[in-house]
Length: 411
Image 1: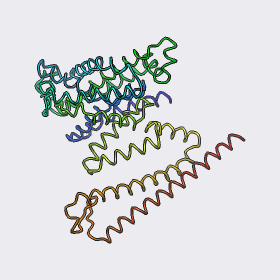
Image 2: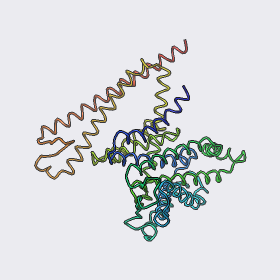
Image 3: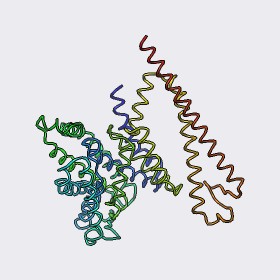
Image 4: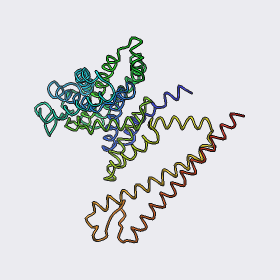
């Protein structure tokens, strides 16, 4: 049973990467999967710092962008075969991490975070001051079909490029999982939890932080090169602070305590930035709100919430837990609908050119009168009230269930 539980996430990851392209060849689907695979590697590399070593970095995108930039120049000048390009990007990211880590890892905690913030800003500024290397506003493009063929593959078609990205995503994930089982990462965990005690047993905390920093930069370079293969361009956005912030969001949303936490967070982040962004202009607001809810309600992320749910069901049983979880789901649904209606209404009123004439569209529905507005506000209030009562009912139910279980255990 434990073996199947450990293997299930790997089967889920393989299915996510391999099954959708077999069912559909739509270009948008392959683009979404390629972005997801890239973010998965990026988030897992970031968790080598945040989750395993306890280092909060604000400049991780710099190594992804520099690795991709070096890979782009190598590809354009020497024609490296595309399947080996992520390895070249990883080496480039590791070289950049070797230089930056020599400075950043001298300190930990807040000082480390501020140093990486400065490094990220320096690299972002260099993209404008060194246009011959970084490509300026246009960036550095590649033509993946111009490289050497791999058998009959030219890598021009999107499906062939995605096959390279998916394969590297899975290989890099396995490599980082194997790395997380090594004595090095166990030492990194010790440095994260108590560096003084780790030093007392003969461990050099700075050296451990430095090695982990370089390894994280290597896999960040791999992820940046996967993005290069997908869009055939390295731009200033690749090293931006927004990119560093996005990987922090993905890692924290998924959870740093489990290996597959960043994977879940990457899937959620790409869903918001790609799928939801095509539906509403308020997707950044929803992402920020979702992040706040996750951090406030489950500081250990979605994987931590899933682990607690599994433990609660094992302790109380399905029959006792399912009704209360249904009530919790009703609460979440009501509050989500209330927030969506309110936010979409606010965005529609602000952006509509016909507000003066009373014509405002909310979720493809035209609000044409004050009566319709009153009905909308009433619906928001009713949904919020129903969600609150459902939440209170579920809270009392969980409290009673806990007392009953404690009483049965005492008897």
